[in-house]
Each structure stands twice: as structure tokens, then as C-alpha cells.
Length: 236
Image (cartoon, rainbow, N blue to C red; front, side, top):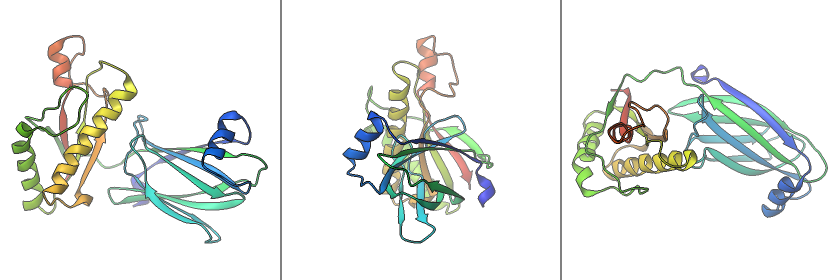
């Protein structure tokens, strides 16, 4: 299971500076505590939302579990001077590593970048037809419901079916905004499926923004093709 990910850990420690001090103060960190910021992405630096993380100190005095936010981040206050075991999990696969938080004086902010690469290939990928969103919105429209109901039925009738809902945009607008918009649209579709009884461990949502275009973004037709939702099938 651990070989399912390769995680490249980049550790950046800032023991002083206005930015770090403001963040530490805003989170009410004590002198004996540090602010730990984790950033989880795929190999192309696209944020991984809803990644399960667990952090435990080796002396068993600290234990936290949670999910990354829509930017692939989590922020924690941890005691200084301890070694931590950190586990990240996605789609049933996990990877463990250790991290030492120094016992430095003054405000301390630690930023860790976790870059994950799956060894698993999707069995097949297909476009989810008749999925429509208003500009800069992620509400599910009534005309999209028949297609989503059909997908929900696939999950319900095939207990082996596991898939990722992948959202994409064109290249109009800010890159980061497009990434968040695609994630929110993928989340909305996942939430709809969960409302239809789909087991949450069998459906995942990820926004890819304007990455991986299937047509040119230089014309209206191409941009229309790039604004799409795909189903990436893992098991069936």
C-alpha cells in the first residue's frame, strides 16, 4: 500500500519574520508551540482536497486527524521539540513519514510540501454529458440531474465501481480562480451523488482548472470543449 505514493517532502522553517510572527500570533500559538502548514499536491502541483492526514507525536502526547482544504492545505499548532509521525491517505492508499519540529526560540512556522504521485492508472475516462453550470457558479442545474442520476445508479448497482469526478475549465481568467472553481464544481457533483446514496469512499472529486485541455483555448469552440466534467474510473 505504501508504494502507491511517492511523496517528496520539502521542509522550510522560518524562525522569525513579520509573516511568521503574524500567523503564529493570529493562531494564538504559545512560545512552546509552532505553526505547521502542510500543502498536499499531485505531481503537477495541483492541490489535493479532502486528503486524510493523521499526525502523532512519537511520545504519544499529540494526535490530530483531519482533511486538507480546497487548496490542499492544513494548518495545525504543534508542540516544539518533538518528532511526529505523519500519514496521508487517499483512495485507500497511505504513506508514512516522520518530521522533527525543532525547539527554536521565538515564532516558528513550518511549511511542508507533499507531492504525491499515484502508481495506479485509471481503467477508463469518459466525459459526463449534459453537465451545465452558470459562469463562475457551481450549483447543480436541473437539466444536469438526469445525467447525474444515471451516474448515481451506476454506483448503486455496481458495488465495485469507484471513480473520481474531475472538473476542468478553459483558460479565461485567473489560474488559481479556475482551479478553485473546477474543484467546487467537482465537489458539487460528488455531494449530489452522496445525496443519492453513493458511498463516500467510492467517489472522489478533484478540480484540475485549465490543466489538460483537450482542444485549443484560442477559439470559442475549443474553450467550450475544455469546460468539461469527466469520470475517471478506478475500479468496476
